[in-house]
Image (cartoon, rainbow, N blue to C red; front, side, top):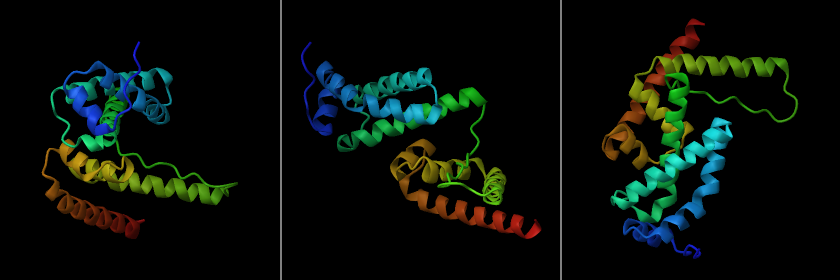
Length: 187
């Protein structure tokens, strides 16, 4: 079998859009391991990581063939964004919903029981506050701070113009602060 070409993302995307199987193979080779380990670190299951990788490349190749990749130079960001969406879908299927998750703090060395308790309390408080936000605000904050998606990707997922993100961000953070301070004053 011929070796896939070693081209820049722009050329790979362009060739894949034209249906070049070598370019498609090169994209798979270039990003396959990265996606597998991303999915494995998020889902902790080899089978699900394989499924995420397969579904991600199916969607990426379909988008390339249909000319839906707007910035071919950002192919890696596009692929990771698709993978994160697929991972979220897997989580939704497992739990039925997708609550905002506050990642546990990993403490260096031995943590005191008091410190661990406080970290759990802070996490619980943040989760309670997040539950009081509107779904769109919760989704935005999760994508922006936890998934670290680009503004363009967030706008695409939310189905809004990128210019509106700043307003959504400021309102969501302001509401989050208000709810958190109100909760802190009543506890």
